[in-house]
Length: 293
Ligand code: SIN
Ligand code: MN
Image (cartoon, rainbow, N blue to C red):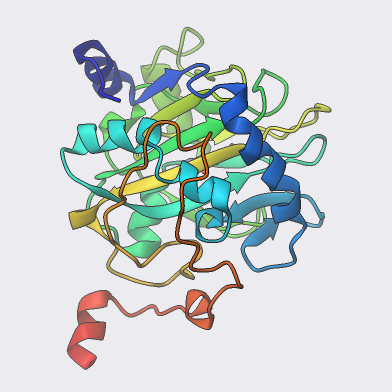
């Protein structure tokens, strides 16, 4: 899938592109069906909401679940990002966020690249998120909120929030959010929330400031996020476990466009469980690790 000139310009201006109904119900069917069993697993890769059993984020399903391994190679998700970077990409992070009915907690205001820089030492912002909705997303079930154009600010100041939710995040404080929203149009478009049917896709810049509210509705809001990084921009530190920030920088080889409808063979390196190495961490930067070896 190629992006048009108009789409490239809009992406540059607003920092995101929304593709309602990018995948059909037939295509998302196997993905949807696989989620409850993945969430039921008592594994480190299932991070639950603070004080609850509901899964907030399942990490790295593309390493142990066939339907998600196929999605992780889908040309409609990978193609546009390779197009934008003019380079091959690898999977930096893969998550299935639950945002469960009644239970799904907030995601504080943040830029993803803030966390990738501060925790993983990713050299530049040449990495991108592609989200796909597995449930319909409406104004009630905690849609993503974006501040259009906020990616143009580059990396903004952030603090490491270890307490608000069950998942540590580098978050942006309220005063700066207020300024950014004002600059983006205030009440007139300063915050946008793409909403649409299951199968819709969003592509968003790694510096775009975003958040989502809690889900008090009776509807789940399961979404999958592929965080794709240009191969040359791979992370330089392994401070977070490998199931959160991947260490295999091999370029993704795309499958054919019908890969969610046919059983193409995919490699599932973690199908028998997480290797011990995927849990190990090191705060030493890559270069120093290499020198010491
Ligand atoms: C994220 O920002 O990584 C996730 C936000 C959400 O799922 O609402
Ligand atoms: Mn994010």
